[in-house]
Image 1: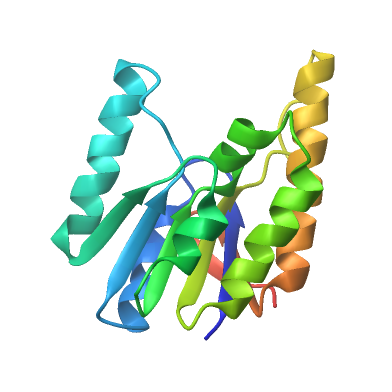
Image 2 (image 1 turned 180 degrees about the vertical axis):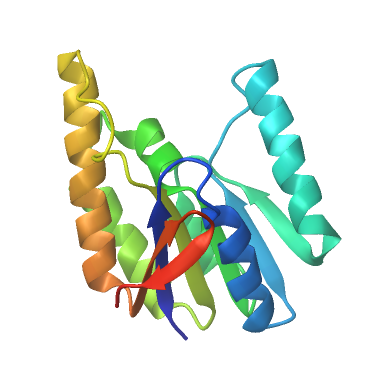
Length: 164
């Protein structure tokens, strides 16, 4: 079907818009969650996201092998939320190879695959070398995914702007 990328800053409406797009693209809906329950705050965020999408989405928790989860998913539309958290789970490995496998799986899918990502390059310059490396990797990941996607949206103040 289509590979879609939705990016923007924190709390810009990315996830909400991704769910809206998915609902418009089919009835068999899946949500691949890349977050893990690190602490009480993240657990609350995960629970809030689950409540927002309701029972209509099958939830698949997969922090690393997202491409494999896409290949094994029988859905009309799949939301992957989010690439930045996925990157935080793999950033000490071969990110380029992981990214190419992910793009191949999404491109081969019969479903619309809707990726959510954070724009981390518009914020504060990271103090640490590790922070700068992560920011750079996120920028390269977002560029590669944007190139591979048929549709790209930038979320600003809860409003989607179509970029591609």
